[in-house]
Length: 268
Image 1 (spheres, rainbow, N blue to C red):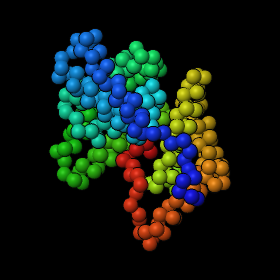
Image 2: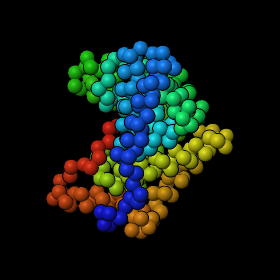
Image 3: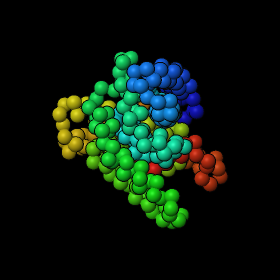
Image 4: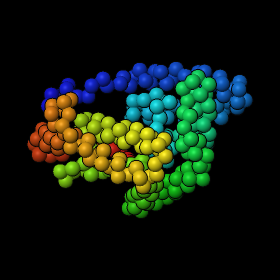
């Protein structure tokens, strides 16, 4: 498989970031003039907006209104807490920041109207429990921290899976999604997740329960894994992942190569 054969029409992350960040000056004025907030609080909201913009642009190549329930929940309950160098005050008001950001984008005709967004924003109790339990790990020794972190990650994964927000981990031929990935595997995982979330949204709109939609989602995912695709030179996604792993191992003389992407306890 040639290096430039896949993917097609890759979004330009720099353009997405420019589009997102261009809203910040107007957002700042709106927070000041319409919301009557102090300069220090406005600064916190702007920082949180930047963190979310960076996340959706770099990790998902989308603009604000394209955010899915999975993307927002993963950011709020995991990504933001683990990876951002934000202050205690900024973390305390994250949900308020996202609420205000959405209200601002609604005025521009590009906000999130779905009910799930309001439910996430209103569930401050769960967010605060995630924030508190993650902060408490700072006092632990290395082994205790690892054990507590594993539990913290599993708890979130189980919550997301209970709502059919998690794509399956097993991808065929004895493989699971890797903790480190080549660019093809990372791109295919992102594609699988988009397909899963879109189908889930459609099923919710049809009034299906999570129990009803789960086997249909898993069936579609299994078929996608096994179906040959022209853009993959006639290989299936599962075969493509296996081939890429073999190629990377051969390039490193049988040793594990440096990853193109490293996953951080993500949606599995």
